[in-house]
Image (tube, rainbow, N blue to C red; front, side, top):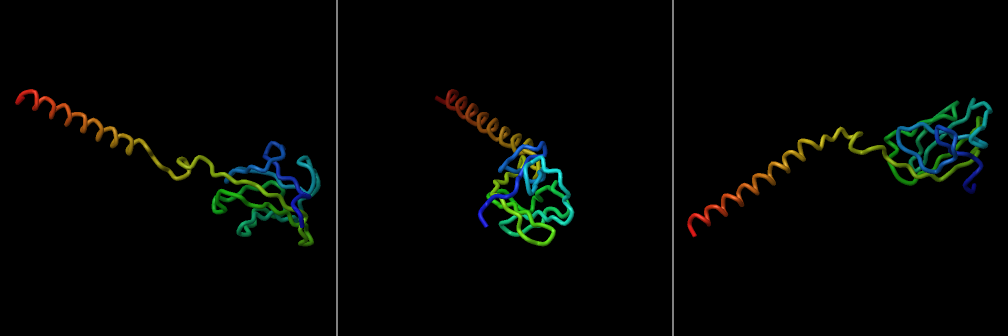
Length: 131
């Protein structure tokens, strides 16, 4: 089946092909403003099949999916493929999600730079005293 026949929309209802892990989005068998029932529908993300929603059009991509190129597919209550869309998935702020605290590392780097500068000043003074 060629790409199409569904809408992938941001949480505000705007059509999109760029999604972020952990953020809500909408998948519908029609336009972004589709108001029909979601009963029995399933939303699946592919590169590795990952069920992201059942009985709802409002879903969230799990972080286990990973960033990159993926496809979002919508299956009807009878199991048939309604359609799919290619999307690009990005990761939210990587530093925030890993818990990385850059300050200790930056502080250590600054201390090393200051220590090196002090060594150069001391060496220069010694040469001045002996020279």
